[in-house]
Length: 322
Length: 249
Image (cartoon, rainbow over all chains, first blue to last red; front, side, top):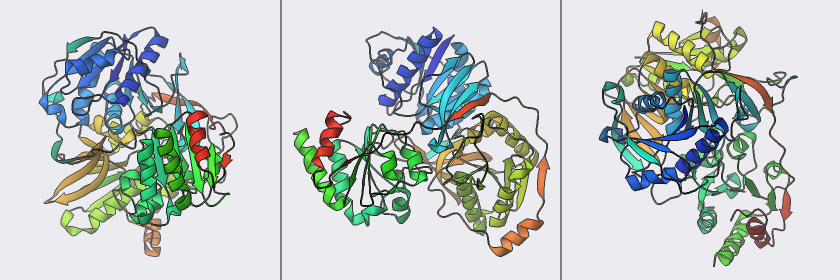
């Protein structure tokens, strides 16, 4: 019996997300008195795989193969469930990102394993196995009991701090051949987002709303994000107007994010917007309307005109970063 | 080609959620129920595809797992333009149970394209669409933000973590859709509403399937501390607080 964690790689490299997952799996394994096995799909160098050991993986199963460069939820789920059976894993940890959302439900059906999706804390209880999860888009949280023998947990991004301690993991090649593991997804084109910090990965996010008035006014906001080393986001009306791309929309129907710092500029704070950002550790609101609901969600606020406040903030950040 | 759109009914997204006595469910009093926003996007996309004769899409069916009290939401889907509606007469918060019921509907009725929203705004599970595809052993694509038909073959745009891909899958498959798939949801016309009244909602009794999860208790999020206001003339103070008090920059 062990805790199995699926660690995704991007062009052969692991990101903070993978280390968060292994650290989380390791904390769960400690609760359950067992060990962690990581499963990696695709080509990853041994030196990179070794890093997973430092976050608590004792064993790493590595399923290599050129066919795995395209995400195929059927093939990926087949590999992970095979690994779970081999390791007799009773708990499986996956990210709640796009890949996790594609793979976890399939894995659930294959293994008849209940899923606690989007968990942000360690299990509340092992018997009955109880997890804490966001429901009603952040307006309520549920204690959910998973009754099945095998349990799957999908971890919300940025919700668990990676903890590193030197440790040597055993790396094993994991042979997966046959029709089961051959995907049917045919990729025709790919556009990678490069050079930019991914919104869902970012520790700091600066976000603009309708109060920014026009797409022409975004320069100081982008500058603040860049000075802070963060990503930019926006509210729904802004992406609907086409002032900013759809990928930046945070909120109930857009991206759900949990950065350490979320700066909302000219965003009134409708329920649907808060649903996407309420897990942020700190929220700062800048708005001309002192009664805007965003100030109820924020720890720090400035009542004022963004066009005047933003340049001063940029200057202050540049001053401390000197 | 036939499309199935799976729909869930959820409290209107502006609802202030209150908990019912015992805290195991929400207080349903005064709640306006709507089609889950992502399912509504799926339906809008299905209608756009059907409107274009070149796609060869002939009909749109909506399916829902819920009690008779959720039929108004199905009527709304019919009024917007769905051709048929199927309700599985069961009520559950467990994704595995719900997906098993919908998979059974698909086995009986046969569809080429199955559309599901990426999550529901009540349980936020992101599970049902993927589970349906595994129950049926058919391909699926998640985080789909575009579907177009090229010579009778659906071409899908999906988000991956760190980019976008254009992919092709053999039909039938499940597309799990998100924002970007369609613009504004459609509004029912008076004619649509009249037509929807006369349409039959087919009712299936549920399969015996076990549930794998149950909600023990709900709780409201902890209230945030009061906002500390900083003078707009001196925003440098904010940066100082973020660095030295919150320690986030």
